[in-house]
Image (cartoon, rainbow, N blue to C red):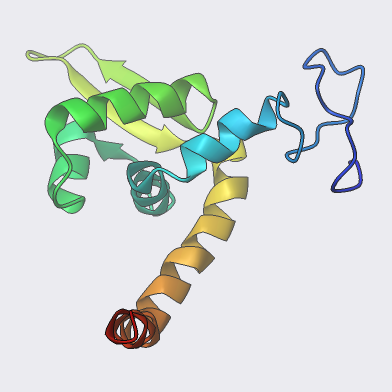
Length: 133
């Protein structure tokens, strides 16, 4: 791993060390994905066990079917989740977290819990800030 602020990490082929502070480092694409609330919520849910598409849609309130589908495909491409189709009529699809996804989910779950535990303080800080503007 490189030192933050260095210019290593611009070559994706592994010749240089990854560095999220470099403009062209591919790790920035990973960070972009992690800033997506749907990715976070899907990871948290799937860390609890495999789920079917419609079950995920019910569990994650507010996510549109199209957005859930797109996010799941992106996460599958990134190796964070797996997709298994069962030969039923209609086809049943189940999603599960991969070992790589589990390494990330353990950290994301902590952030989700932090958000739940500290929302009152965040809302108070926002109200105070807004009142002073």
